[in-house]
Length: 355
Image (tube, rainbow, N blue to C red; front, side):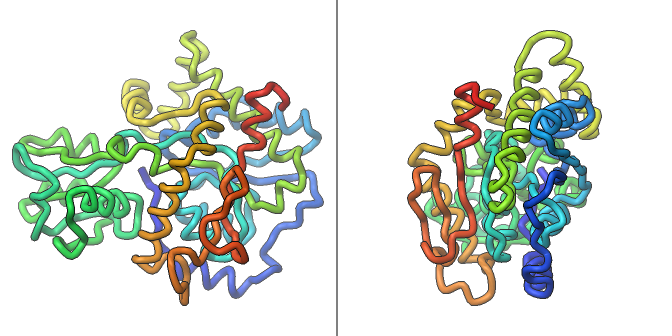
């Protein structure tokens, strides 16, 4: 999935240059969110084009413009400099781009986590993670693929010093694996499916082995939550769309077919991606997920990886540099520099029928 943690120096420089003048004013009635193509974010395409977003925005007396980006990182960059009030992104990218850039951000909707959509594949039969020792491993550097590799190596008693990471564009990774020179890759669906379909390969690790660690979210500027209409409209639209998707009638087929086409695949292809995604079709499981103790452990792992790879900003003294607020009010890291928050308030309201 195109969820890349790159271009942070550019983003940080933009934030520093524009400063407070980039931050949107939230005494307003018009809002904008950005999204990019990924299985768990395609519902925003359907919600916008079907009129569901407009319906909920109208209910609360506001407008919400839902804008698609073909470039995932550019969508986050635009959010970070204040052009959008919210944006779809992973937990890792939320920490290392807007939060590291000084933008106080809140995970308003936790929509899913990768449950097999990201994986490591080696050439040859009956391989294991230990066979990566001494190899070049092709992946999008500083992405969730890189994080997945680090977690896999930790579990096998290895580190990145045992191999060489080769930065490879997601656009090139399938073609690269088809050459004789490349022996192992880390990537995401639908690219992962293409790689796994090649002859004589061994899938040796995937995100289902670290469930709940690669999280896909709608992140909003925390100041925007001063206007509860914005949050309620987004959450209401999201869970109405989830209800349509989760059904078994023709409306569900039509909705998922729309999402499949918009993402460049067909319905079976989209269903295959959904099968490797733990979607939270109802709000209660999402609330339970973000309120679990596992989230603290995950975000600690993410912060440690991010610091080790220089992703928390220039001069960050340690992985605790950026504070991360959990739904119960606990803070991981710096209490004086909280820039990423997980808030279950509005998902809980949806679960309670109060949206």
